[in-house]
Length: 253
Image (cartoon, rainbow, N blue to C red; front, side):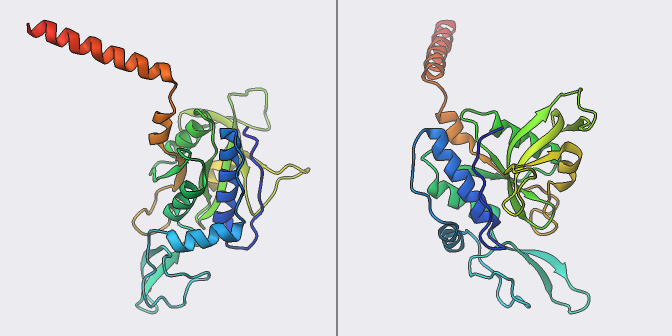
């Protein structure tokens, strides 16, 4: 389990800013550096100013909160009013990823994934937890687009009848460690210790719009993961390429 400091959300719709704060704070810690941390309100200001979306005109009733660059998903036409039903994100996946990239250490950003199979999303998140460096993953809880952090997991423990194994993705999991900015754990723990069966039902998909039925998941982006490979891997790659080129030239001569 990663030692991520929990931040409770300062306002009802600040789960996105709170998760950004937790991820960025831990990313700087993982890098072995310290950086002044913006307040959740500052993260919120960045999200609303830099989200790569545009709220459709004339939404009735207007969403709460509401801002010009808000992402709203088309959920079809209301049979009662004949108007489009919109589901608007307080913090969209792309808005959250953009905000984290702007505040995390260089090369410690995240990318948005939209797996349409729950197990694939869980595999992505566990890969983040086990990566180099090890970093948390961010996901939505249930279908209300509530952002949380995944910081650890318990797997393959057959000695816990209270935590039966559940096959999720490529793993047999007992439980998962979640930081929920809305709800702290019990007995003084900052994290929620969630049974795998419960997590499976809580890991939320999008209910409508372009990514309907998909699971918005933010994980460390593969670009910087590739850049952070140890130097000796680059040496092996270059030498291997030189050998292949040599063999090709020799075969053609």
